[in-house]
Each structure stands twice: as structure tokens, then as C-alpha cells.
Length: 273
Length: 308
Image (tube, rainbow over all chains, first blue to last red; front, side, top):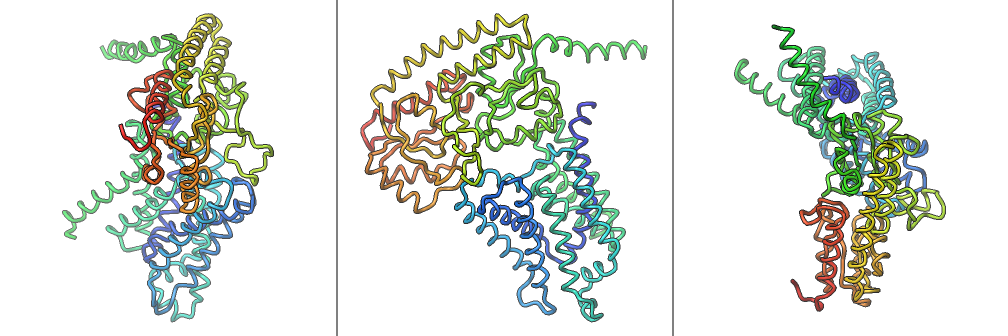
């Protein structure tokens, strides 16, 4: 048991912090029907990093960080501008296009950099098991700040996500708020991806929120259930990864999925879906 | 009664620990190091290996067991340099300073004292080499395996003075066997001196140099960058001109590109390994090189275009 805590408490702490912000953001993402926006933003950030390498900056240097951050902001601008009052192209299509094009552009750029893609590939596959203290603290501080901004403006964010038509009618500057949303969202996602990898971050974002929607239609209720869900699945996932010696991130994701199937079953049997 | 049970239970927990404490707990970063370390420690050590042998050593995802084994280990033997990019994060997670490279007293860097090829002249990343220290695939040269064996034996001997002599003797035995085998391998390769070869990834310069082959091209335009059409086109022309007969690849790489190039040029694809245990035939360092050299001998020995 001691060994378990020694090895697993850092990844578990990281998972709980990830749950805190992602279960919340996931509720917005599902309401806005922009499910894959985190993958697109993570890919744009990687494109920013690739560009920095093209100019000869060091992979882990300050300059490279700013490149990837600027790229993320660019992505935020794109997603806030492409939201139309009456949409011609669904935003989900734009997200897909951004994802595909930025992945491809990164390949093109990397083929012109001297370094190759070995290290940049690791940007997108972070291993939650090996998270270290400074990483956890940085994450906690950043996510607390983002959480605070969202708490301060919770009414506007909720209104825009759940009922954009009303927001437009009330002459709220939806695009400007969308920009704030996507910038904060991009900040969160790009730093989580480096620690936990794209797959795990996607699961933290979408699965607890989806599970919570089955049982509650209030934001506060969903948020509470999402947090419970994320905390439970993370803990079970950590335990299984440890006892069966399985890759940690992948185990947690499968537990997320299994739990959702279980909850759907419960809902079907007891609540007559 | 309860107490008695508790005592029995506690004993059950303790006994294996006591037995285990007799042995030196060694963790090796990859299977080739584990195999050499095994030859040196004999039954004095339990050896655990982090990277599975059939995987690309650049991309290993450590599991909880890896962290635990390393936390409880007495010695950590690794390849040094920057091949095993996951090693730093893994050691950070374990958090034991005495295992950290380069100063930790319980880590053994097997690459110490090895003459490295392809060391970049300037250390700026912009100049563009992934491997800042030089090419890290050094153990494909048997002469380097001898240095590694000596490194491991000497450093283990410093940590366990009571076993020092035994370790050094075992290293000497290992190295004598290398000398004997190297003579045989070189005889096998003698007819093929200067034979041009193409590799998928630049992971064989030490082998190529030792056995008198000539590296004329790589399928990857740059290490880690997938082959591009134009690059392959040029490569195929060049291979035809120089009548290159061999494309060296590894088990974990995609097979379509080397096979296509082989088809267009009449060359043969040989799947080498530099990790002990990647194939059942490669049980230890010697049988691994037997395997690689056997493949090469067979492929170079056959007339062009003929298959086995």
C-alpha cells in the first residue's frame, strides 16, 4: 500500500486537478456542441512549437513556449470568429478542418526543421504517471486563475453556452466573450496535454460531463456529478494501473468509458430512459 | 489467537523480503544492458528491465511497476546520452537523487569512455541534430560491448567491494568471448567489405564501421521524419547506380516503404535488432549479433533478385 501511494499520489493529485477544471469546461463544450475543440487547440499549439523549432529555438525554451501560446490564441480567435448567429457551416466542421490542417502543417514544417518530430510527438502524448511536483503546482495555479475568471463571469458564460440566441438578443457581445472562453480554454488544454496527453485530456473534458448530463439538467448539479465522476474514475483507474501494471493514462480512459456505460445502464433500468 | 495469526502473517510478508535482500536489485533501462549486466553479476543480482525489447527505445511509456522497481532498486544501469528520452521523467517520478544522471552514485552510465560517432561540432540545436552527444546506438559494435561490460563490472565492484573480483572476472570472461566471436563475425563479413547499405533510421553506424560496410543512404530524409516521395526517388536512383543490395530496418518500423524501395531496386530488406530478446533467436548479446550477421550474410551471399 505504501508503494501504491508513493508511486500514485502525484498522478492521482494531477488527475484530481485535471478533473476540477475539465469537468467544468466539458459542460460548456458539450452545451456548445464543440466536442473536439480541445484536440484542435492542442494541435494548433503543437504547430506553434514546430514553427519555433523552424526558427531554431530550443524545444523547451521560453521562445518556444510563447510561439505555442500565440498559436493557441490564434486558434481561439478563429473559433470565436467562426461562430455565426445563423450558421452556414457547422462549427464542428471548422474544428475538424483546423485540426487536420494544423496537423498537416506541422508535418510540413517539421520536414524542414533539422530536428525531426521525435520530441514534438512527445508533446501530444505526455505520461500522467511521471508528472512531477513543479508540473502539478503550475497546473493548480493556472487552473485556479482560469476557474476564478469563469466564476466571476459565470452568468454570461452560462448564458452564451446554453442559450446563445438569448445572448444575442440581449446585445451581449458574444464574440468577445467567446474569445475569452477559448483563450482560457486553450490555456488549460495546452498545458494539460503536455502533462497527460491528448486522449486523456479529451476524456477528462467530455466523459464526466456527459455522464453528469444523464442525471441532472442544472449546471451546479452537473458540475458536482462531473467532479464525483472524474474523481472516482481517476482513483479506480490509478488503482487498476498499479495492480495490473498497465499504462496509466490508457487505463484511466477505459475506466471513464466503462463507468459511463454502467451509468447509462443504471439510468435505463431505473429511470426508464 | 489473533496475535498469533498476525505474527504468522507478518512472517509471510517478511520472508521473501529477507531473501530478496540477499541479491542486488538491478534495474536496467533496456534489455541489452540487462543481458550484459546478467553476464557480469551471475546469480548475485536480480535484474529488471524497463524497455520491452521489441519497442523503439525512443518511445517507451514507463508503467507503475517500472517506477516501483526503480524506487526499490540498488543500482540503475542505463545507456547514458540521450537515446532514452523517457529516462529523465521516470527518474523524476522516482525522486531518488542517487540514481540521477550524471552524479548519482547508484547509477551506472554504460556509455562512459565510448568513442562516439557523429558528435555535432557545434552544440546549437539549430544546427540540427537530435542527439546532442553523438549517435547513441553504440552497442552494435562488439568492441563497445566490451567497454560497457567493463564499465558495469567496475562500478558494481565499487558499490559491492566483496564481489568486485567476481564481477571483474565475469566481465573478463564476457570480453574474451566477444574477442572470440568477433573474429568469427569478421570472417563471416570478410567477403562483403565495402558493401553499400541503406538503413531505415540512422541507428547502425557503429555496426557498419566495425564490419567494414558502407552506409550510402537512409530511408528517412531526417531522423524521425517519414520518408518523402522526392527523397525516396533520389534514393532509388542512387541505390540502382551503386547496386545497393541491403536495406536495414528494425522490427518496430513500418514495412511498406522499405519493401517498396526493395522492389524497385532489387535490394533485400533485412530486419535487424539491437535489443536482446526482440526475436527468440536473439537470447543474449552473442546470439543477437549472430542473428543480425547471419541475416546479412545470407542476403549478401545470394545472387541479385533471388529470394530465400
